[in-house]
Every structure is written in C-alpha cells, then in structure tokens.
Image (cartoon, rainbow, N blue to C red; front, side):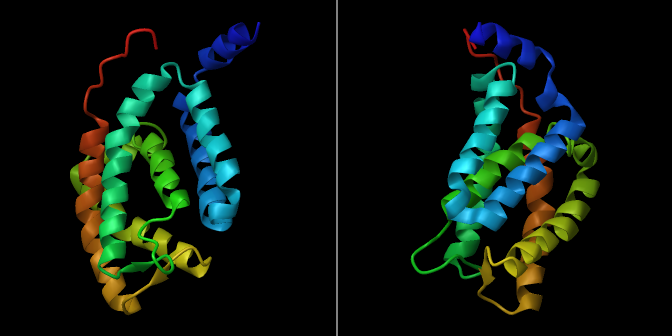
Length: 180
C-alpha cells in the first residue's frame, strides 16, 4: 500500500516541475541559512522529501554528487583562505554542505534556463550568488574575513567561473542504476 502511494506521488513528477523545485529549494535555503545547525533535522527531511519524490533516487544522487562536491570544495577553500568565517575550527558547516546538495537539484530544474548560455550563467553567478552570500552574512550564517569590497571581488570572480562549470557538470549523462 505504502509503495503504491509512493509510486503514485512519484508519477506526478513534482520534483521536475519548475515551480515545485523553486519553492522546495527556497524553503530548504531558509532552513539552512536561518536555522543552520539547529534546523539540520528539518533540512534532512527536506532533502529526504526530494529523494522520495524523484523517479530514480540513486540516479539522482549520482547526478547531484559531483555538483555538491565541487561546491563544497570551493566553499571549503574560500573558508580555508579566510574569505568565509563560520566560527573557530569550522571550515564548512554541515548545513552548508546540505545546501549544496539542494542547490545541485536546481541546475537541471528551476534554474536550468540560466545554463543555456555560458555567459548568462557567468553573469548571474558573478552577480546573484555573491549577493546571496551577503544576505547569508546579514542573517548571521557567515562572516567575511576580508573587507566587503575585496570579498565581493573574490566572490564575483569565483562564481562567474564556477556557475557555468556547474552547469556543465549538471549536463553530464548519468546511466540509470539497475533496480532504481
């Protein structure tokens, strides 16, 4: 009975709908940035919902992993060199690693239109993403270790290069996993 319900819900393909992915991602973003570590259980529920609703969860995990890993590596490097400050001894907090998994879901869904042209992805990455980090800083999720201007310059450069490459990763074909 439960399996039939899950199949029926998956049949709606909600996760593939732009509006659903956008709403789900924004909700997950708020869980991560506002709640941070104290809302990790809710963030995990949100990610669990995504994987419960996709048609092939293992294929989805394989599709998202390289994107999330790339983002985690970049943010860890920015933290290690002092651009980001998440507190003593923290290179990247768990909530941010989970946010990267959530963000990865958008590249082939609600934000797919941005990746059609590399220059659009570079422009949006260089403008919107540093703004997003600034909002996170205003909400207390991150502190910047450098001056606001130098931080902005670094983030603009990093994201203007990173976002087009994340779209390239997102477009890589993933073979279905048997039994998924």
